[in-house]
Length: 268
Length: 275
Ligand SMILES: Nc1ncnc2c1ncn2[C@@H]1O[C@H](COP(=O)(O)OP(=O)(O)OP(=O)(O)O)[C@@H](O)[C@H]1O
Ligand SMILES: [Mg+2]
Image 1 (tube, each protein chain N blue to C red):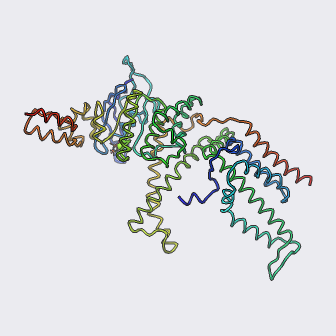
Image 2 (cartoon, each protein chain N blue to C red):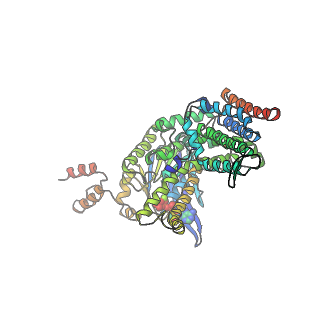
Image 3 (cartoon, rainbow over the protein chains, first blue to last red):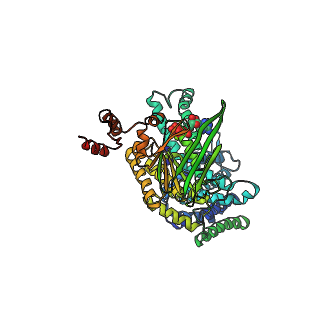
């Protein structure tokens, strides 16, 4: 499962820090507030209060900085691309030019701003997912969506579906590996040859995978029913949510970051 | 509490018309007893297991709990609460991302108060020896451990009966032993009634009653001893006698009074008494 390990975004990094102990709902709300703050800012210096709060969060979480750096990896390409485009194609006062390339002062400023924006967004979400277990996160998302159940959106079911999906991802990955090995041992050529040949190579993997997944789904439905599950009926939660002082701190800190950004934008 | 199936039939509609999967099946599971169901593939064992656990409703007949005074409860059997079902594939019955959460799943459906849930999950973790794995994700468990989690998940709902539909058939021998020991322990300590659908002789032998299904009909319902001594039932049910049983039949060719022995110990004892 090298595939899932190299992808830090969305990965849980277990720990016992204050950030880990804070409630998932508070962290999710704080994350959304911080993201709003990211988009409210209009110039790079305005990010200072936000960066301070986020930096404090990262330090308090006790999660190694390496982990966050790895979290940035998947978006390196995106960052480089936007920075280059902004730098070279923003009109303004020329700083440096060669042949048809021209870097403008405005371009550099804008590129820096977008760089900060992307990095802050990523770090915020990495901090959330790294410090919160998936199950807590799905519960928090369900809580967050709860008001929507009044207008007919099945928030509890959405959360359940998400957690079942998380439960089965590793199982299905293992199964895929098993099928690939079985097909290769029978002489199937997978991942070789032209694009068309490669796509064809996937068919003997996908078909058994689909068949077994449908059987799984069928079994699972019976198993859930056998344990008293009824779609749409009331359920309680094993994981109790309590709103503690840590949660208040988390929310206040994110509120300060947002307020800081807004005040800076208005008055400085 | 006794679980009683009274002349239960079950029909399914197929493109070729209605097919009767089960026909007039009677079954009586006494409180705290161990019973087994055997039969060839497609004889309707899983259908019977689902009917007995209240997941399917028969097209005729009744499935009900009968209390000590012989009064039949009027309500349907409630899945999980009255009868817990565990089936074959350990990978397909765990719902949650950790062992602990999975065990709690049924309790969440019951809308139990939080303290009670924690208490019951705690007890189940200890009882089944899963304490050290409580925060493991299911895919990091062995097949036997997964089946134990599945058992724990129905056990916390405190059913009077546990139905195991070939629950050990995908496990290796040591895991199978382990799961069976657990089931027997639950039967002993909690007095939970057990119905095992199985094709393993060693599992049949621990049952006090064995039902033989053939083509949707219950062709035998008796102690393992007498089921195996009825030639026609053995044939209809596609049963294979244990080695000592087959040897006993050979012995009966010479000594007609030789008993049918189902274990090696019995056989040795009987053979020693020959003179
Ligand atoms: N919903 C259904 N639709 C069509 N046929 C069904 C349905 N349910 C059961 N059957 C048929 O009923 C018969 C008995 O099925 P069942 O799964 O109960 O058998 P089984 O004894 O458990 O078999 P196995 O040993 O393979 O597990 C089979 O022939 C099956 O095809
Ligand atoms: Mg079956």
